[in-house]
Length: 226
Image (cartoon, rainbow, N blue to C red; front, side, top):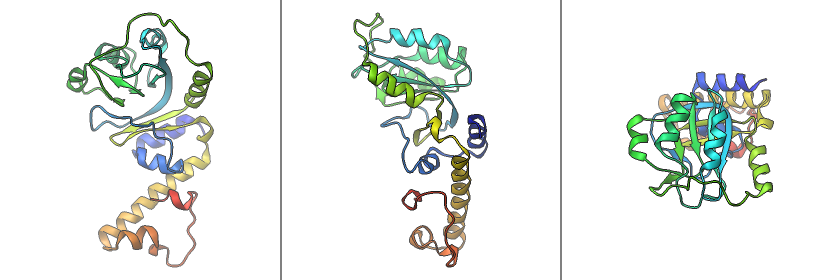
């Protein structure tokens, strides 16, 4: 099982961030990250960059090497309430570097332009006050950098209207694929029970009456099923 197999499956079947989070035991979401523009669905390998010391200088340096078709995660490691970047960086990444999407664990600005262009961008909020364009005068916490780099290295990001979920490298195996296939089938069954049979959500999701007394063969933990 390769990361490319997982990305292809998620893209073709439009497996939502909600379903992926369930496959991760109801975890994996980047806190407070929401879509700037609605209606985008993006999945792909993560390229991790970061800003710190209220400076976006490191971001400008790091994004020079962003590979095509990656989801660029711009991590806020000490920029306070300042926006990490605005329209120019977004355009550079999405148009000229051909990134699949941009995810920011902090704020952005020039939002009117980001909305006008309908860029696939996710962030935690907005601010007209940006970071300084200067070399940082301090270094980020090495332990924090190592931790975040380890988490995002070779990870997959799934981004939609609900948020952004990260699939770490150590979860990208055949077992995870089985979980996604199961949850996709289970969703179809649940909608069948509620829409056609007119069952209650309690009878369908809690009692799982559709099993007719047979044991559930679920690769998910019980509390991860809705």
